[in-house]
Image (cartoon, rainbow, N blue to C red; front, side):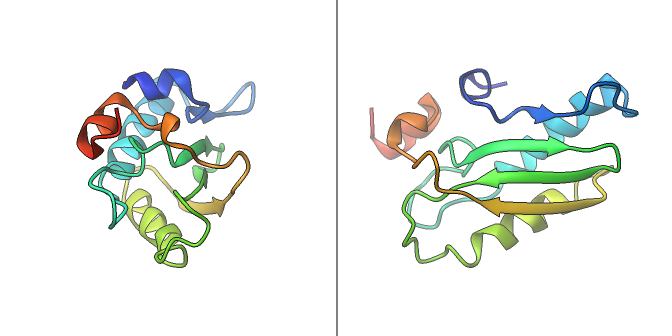
Length: 125
């Protein structure tokens, strides 16, 4: 796990008494994060997870993954495409039934949401 995972609320949320075993939730989480790290903002040389664009990952008992994410700017030129990229990347993770991506802008993204890795990659440290 990166420091970002500990600092931001992007760990999966499951209902108390989930029918999915904790070890399976952990595997799914790791695989979902790995998939998110394959999606890059085309204007910034860092993946969307390390940029801090992923605000929440929720895995329900039916293995529907809901992701709340944002953009570096509301007028981002790929705003219409980015949710599809995220859904496609996470949708191929074994054990994921379906993916729903919600675009949110509250709280607004700021560079302080970036991991140390992304700050180094973008020279924003």
